[in-house]
Amino acid sequence: MIDIENMIWTEKYRPKIFDEVKGQDNIVKRARAFVKQRNMPHLLFAGPAGVGKSTLALVIARELFKESWRDNLLELNASDERGIDVIRVKVKDFARTKALGNVPFKIIFLDECDALTREAQQALRRTMENYTRTCRFILSCNFSSKIIDPIQSRCVVFKFKPLPKKDIFEIVESIAKKENLVIDNKTKQALYEISNGDCRKVENILQSSAALTNNIDEKVIYSVASQALPKEVNEILELAISNNILESRKKLLNTMLENGLSGLDIIKQIQSLIWQLDIENIKKLNMIKLCGEIEFRLVEGSDEFIQIEALLAGIAQLNN
Image 1 (tube, rainbow, N blue to C red):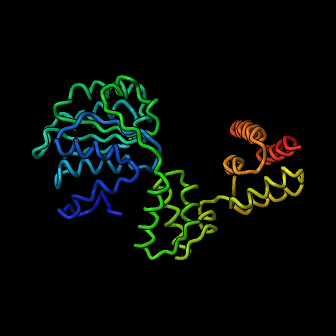
Image 2: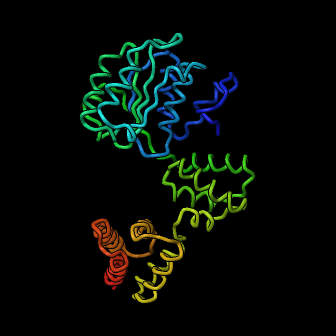
Image 3: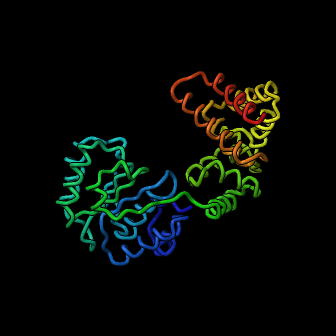
């Protein structure tokens, strides 16, 4: 993939750079239109991690300002600098100066801005209003509900979605080709299921796996991601359903210890595999409800091994 941050800006990259943002076709189309017009409103990017929010912000800056993009972009991570002083000092000082080049505004990119305090958000609201002539804001967050309404009303909101399977497979194939990795369809499917559409997670798992072997299979992926193989979790569930509770408990504890899994990790895997079981739908619903109750207890601080055993006992009881 093209390194957006450090690449040398030449004509051959320019037509391709927007294509680096995968799985967000409608958003990219609108962003291209803003760049073409050399004008844009304040933007709010909301969505899960690893789906291209920061990349698109950098792409817009590079497309607008070309070689002078570093002088016209202020990038701050609001989770590190979240107080009101950051807005009053850093942001205001940058916003009040005129842009270099033929674009009439600068860009301030605030990443993870849902971490800003309420006071900082109120100060940001006034800054956005006062410096519209010389500055545009791109705000990025995981949860738009944590951004106050006055800021949301000043922005065009873009809702990013997790990357679909097709785009994850395309990214994996591209990396495999460049790095000479052998990856089959089962492995790609495992990467997609583990990542939940998070491109960053896919690339990190692939990099760790490639350090072990060039021939990457499903077992390597689950090992690197510190997750149990679906086949093992399925066997645990089948044993519990058939009322073989002692064998189910033994296999579950072995799986958790061998893979270094916490109680919350294993419950998430159990919950996702319940839907694939060949049992009545009403039993599946009751098992999901039981998973939710056990997860709540674990979050509240209960002993994980006792609670996991209680989960297996509850599954066995539901299926008798």
